[in-house]
Length: 73
Image 1 (tube, rainbow, N blue to C red):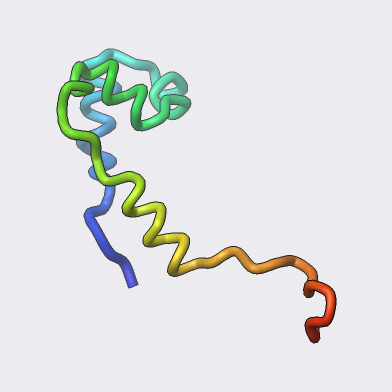
Image 2: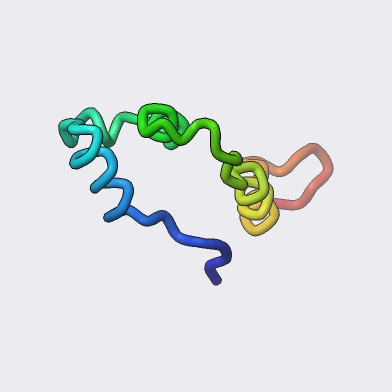
C-alpha cells in the first residue's frame, strides 16, 4: 500500500536538466535538499520528509539479524 504523494520525477528532471542545466550525472548525485537550494526554493516550507521517514519506519521496522539472547530463532 502506498501513502503520500509520489516524487514528480519528470518535473524534477525538467528542473534539474532543463532549467538548471545540469548534466544527468550531476542531477542524479544531488540530494533533494541540494536540488531545492540550487532551484532557489529553500525559502519555501520544508517538505514532510521526517513524517514520511517515520511512516516507513513503522511500516518496515528494523528486525535484528540474529535473535537476541533467550529468543527462539
